[in-house]
Amino acid sequence: MTAATTVSKEAGASAHLRELVDRRFQRSVEVPARFFAANADLVSRACLEMARRFQRGGRLLVFGEGAEATDAQHVAVEFVHPVIVGKRALPAIALPNDVAILTGLARGRDSSDSFARVLEILGREQDIAMGISRDIAGPSILSALTLARRLGMLTIGLTGDRGMLQRGNLVDFAFAVPSDDPLVVQEVHETLYHVLWELVHIFFEHRVVE
Image (cartoon, rainbow, N blue to C red; front, side):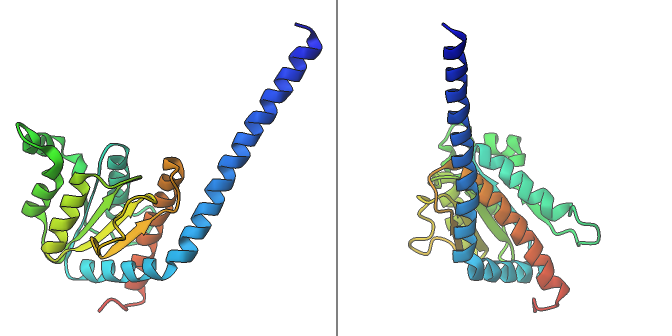
């Protein structure tokens, strides 16, 4: 292989990698812009209802499977331990945190209702249930949200484009990211729950939650 051939191959590889980066960056810019433009009013209404539930002594109970379990943890810590000094702490629990309870409930039986069984014990009418899934919400997410709504809790679902939660009134607020790319979906979800946190506090600060 000549030096010229080596240089040509390296240049081609570099151009290909640059194309991949550009394409990834483009998706990471375009999808959030479209999502928030289409859902701005829905996000605002969800935050007002969340603020009202917190005002009534409610808690945020959030859950997800696999990688989304870490998103649930992220959501909970945002509310319990605000990163902005002076913001009030709000009660939130990430249900995937308690591995002992979840695995105990799943022992010897179908685990698809584990989150629902925890909500049945912990959930109260004034609480908020948030389920997170990057694609199609699995049985454990759907059963928990269905039970939460039956208990009178405020229900919020975050999914990818094929999440289906927005159909059939399964939840009070459904946010489906218009993408089948799980990385982009997660990026939008993360921005969304930061926005939810911030707007909830804005409603409190402007005293419009009563």
